[in-house]
Image 1 (cartoon, rainbow, N blue to C red):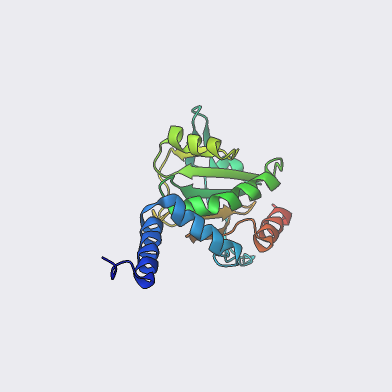
Image 2: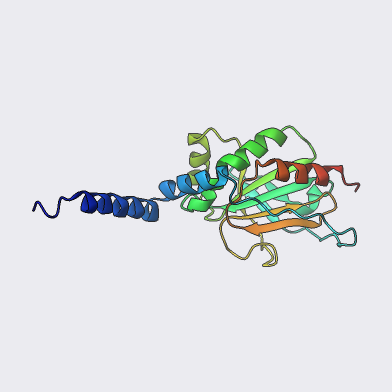
Length: 195
């Protein structure tokens, strides 16, 4: 018994326990990813839009909030549209949520920027409970139409940004720090584009 309680075995047991917690507890994995985001990993890759990039016809792509209000992307032309597909069970989704909330807080009163947080499970009660528990005020929606696979392939999290002309400006899967100065600068560039 004494041989099993050596320092090396105790350290190994602690390491294995931590690994298992990170592996099986979504909030622990999210916490680890958030820490990595803070030190500069998981930066969103923003690139300027080519002037000749055609506008997309976004009409018919719809999302519905918990009160039954339907938003059609086609009606949002002239606005920068930030869409995030996420789920409460997804650790990378939970990890990026504080940065998205920070970005949302910066633009929530800006009539030129729209946020659509899409619960991929369509369990608006559960996702709203998650938002409320963290005092996030971001609007939560479920999918109310077909989403073209060119936009969303099913990977969580996926973040999409359209410019004011309806051109796809950003489409990335995986966690990222959306409160970074580089991403805020990117949103500002999209806002300054002429319609």
